[in-house]
Image (cartoon, rainbow, N blue to C red; front, side):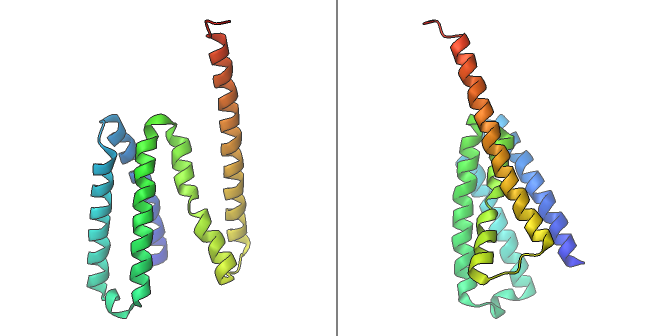
Length: 156
């Protein structure tokens, strides 16, 4: 049961994160401050949670190192996302940041030899299709933008 609770909370948090990033962009908030607040509060919450449950005493030190490295990389990714959202569509930006989970998934399959069942196979296929559709959408958008520029070009 707790697995489904965490899944529902994760979906809600991703949804909230996207909405709050867009609201922050409309309010002209600085990406660095948003990022610092996001990761400080997230770090505080997860540290409190793990200390209350007593996890730090039973986990190997490597887990803390990997978690710290992943947190730093996630912070850089979110900062880039928040900075770049002003120059592109939210749907494209959000899709790309969520597709970043594909890398650990593929590494888990290749490195750890994790079994790929029907559900995981469908998920990986959906990721590949998402990337294909994203590429195709960008290609069509570039073609339309090129036609618009050609139509309004005073040199012609």
